[in-house]
Length: 184
Image (cartoon, rainbow, N blue to C red; front, side):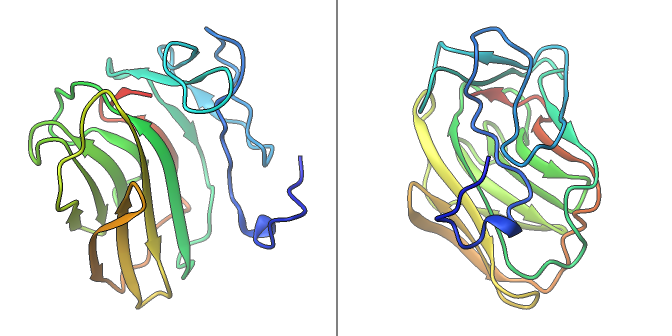
């Protein structure tokens, strides 16, 4: 599929709509990437923001998607965003999306109770406000330039920011639903 009205489409590395058949484990990627699906990750019609289904991760350690070698190290401008419906979290740092040990975006149920967070090369950005469980939230991480500002947005509002010159090692495996994340 192409998105001719998006001037940045050539720079998009993956786009997962999670729209499909309830109970299906086939996860289409608009950029044609082939994701490895953990044994418990599944498309579910129980909770969905758009379309017929969304990805459900039950937190058992096998609810994840993974994709190897998705980006190039040192990419200066990055945006990672998702609609997230977090349920009760039992792990200290469940991750919505992660790249090896250099980047993670998650929703903490214990360490920073009910707050979205981003970790980039050991630097934590934790949202300044709590987000409710069992509700859809739009979460976005941006970095402008390799030495520019990094920001975390929750529901369209800047929730945390800092400046960090670390390169995100994004040649590693990308994982969605890591570290026992529970939700959609």
